[in-house]
Image (cartoon, rainbow, N blue to C red):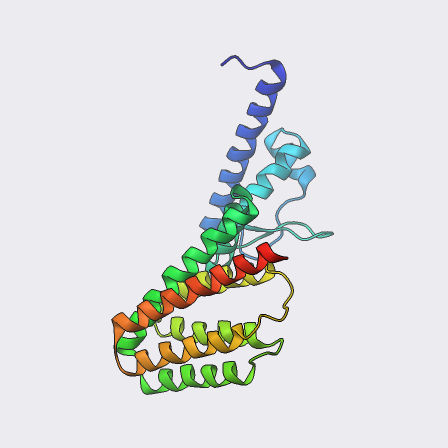
Length: 240
């Protein structure tokens, strides 16, 4: 493919931004620039690298995406170090931008189903008495919230209590991100004709399987529960 002059200029600027980002990232990693310390001004960076402001800004955006720069309106960029939350949040944003809203939502539902079914299986095999108490407390709050605006929140809290048993902070963070994203994109709550009660009864069955130490039943019940819930929401959406 032959690039015209405009394409060549854009490609060159992109390459320069990548190189500048790599140099600044190296300085932060080595400690030459400490986390929290302001980076040089855009003007200073332009002079140092003999480039334009747009190129410098693109380099800073690249660094922000990697977690090495904090960008705030009205303040100079500050050095930072990548965190688990930052990396996963950035990844989630890219995934959402790559997929359509409907497709993205379906993938998130599938990921949630995979995580929670596996977590229920693990919880049935190794949940401590304290963890079982925490799951039961979440279940009780879920029952109290039936047919109220707090039901969805209590529903998520019940499943989260089970995922917590796994003891993996990355899995828990992914779960929280996926569920938060799904809830944010769901329509406002409306009367579901007893669906809260159905969900609670399914939660109760999952809890009882975990207490009984039946890992296979706990996973299968969770899988069926989440699939029924998802299909129910799809069906309700087609009727609106």
